[in-house]
Image (cartoon, rainbow, N blue to C red; front, side, top):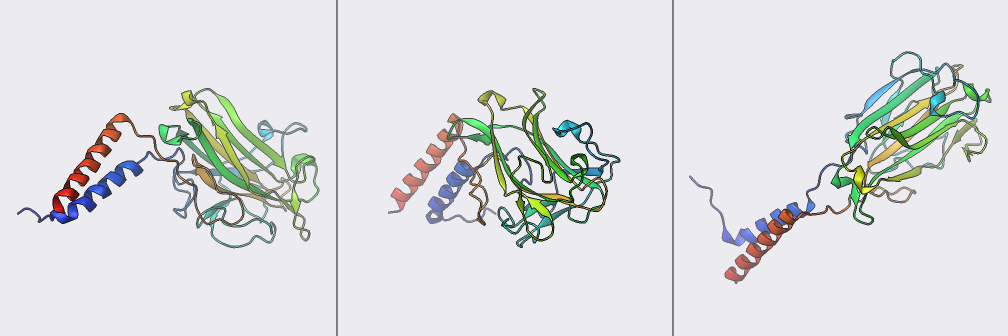
Length: 277
């Protein structure tokens, strides 16, 4: 038996299909990039212990040494305030942000990684270039150790296809030249959420990008360090300041076949509406 179907419902049905055709787009480069699944699904959490940075200042990502392979702490946080970083509005976007490592100390290091491929869904129609965008804020205790023993953070994007680092940021707590804010009470330093926007040439579509984030306690064991993370993807981020809205998804570019189908669907809808009047 065939299901009954009302012609009077057809315009609404066709319009819904047409809207779905316009709205459908490939998933942005990072999966679960806003941590709204309330988990680290699609991410690789790792870590170990911090024996101290190698070499001498100025330190970079190449100075990082991690002993062992036991992941450090990683949590998902909702709305609230951080007494060690009172000017941060949490979460950064939507309902949840990630917190990599924590304040407890223990010489622990937590790492976070994900690899993705740039696609046409990552292309911003404003400049026709693929983008990777995200936001992070480090919170590091400042025990006044020597530079190589301080808590630190590291964030990097590497193009695996071209074997080049396209974005990198590293700093240890109270590093000279880094404009850390202070809580004024307990000896913690932090930075406001930094909104990263890395644009790639159009030819980068199809290339693999690896994201790495590292948060580390001090190497001597008693002082913590962690990083808040959110908004990993290709869409533009709203300004800082407590917005509960997620990134605006760029309108997808439709190819000729999709445009033809959309025109056909809208034409059918118009014909049906005319017949029912």
